[in-house]
Image (cartoon, rainbow, N blue to C red):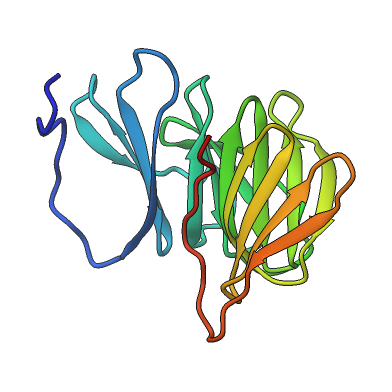
Length: 189
């Protein structure tokens, strides 16, 4: 594959896409798109997009999606659940948030981090899918990154907060003087 080469394409539909994630599984050229009342799985080998099959789980909207290095995706839903996807099929849901939609979700180094409207970032073991820690930020997290035991969270208020995962001590690095969300961030070396 060359840089700029179109790998797959499809016509758009009426429902907006809110997030997109690419497979981190070595050699796996696939992605998931998530949005209003839908998930879609795009696989280069199969050459087409497949709509998500909810397998008895509630069909809902998704604000955020990420994937792991085993080829599965995790989508943060409007019903406060995390949906676990293998290809275009929902394998299960995880209930770690107390209420509202999940606005941010990332998979880093074998751990899943999700931020919900309950104001918490939940740290989830990537193997057992059990919540190992929930840290309260008091506001909806919209962006999350982790490096060297430091959790950095962008909040719906526009604030950026760093939290030591072990001690849970927090440092606010930026506060917005206006309403505004931090939709993305990345820790730089």
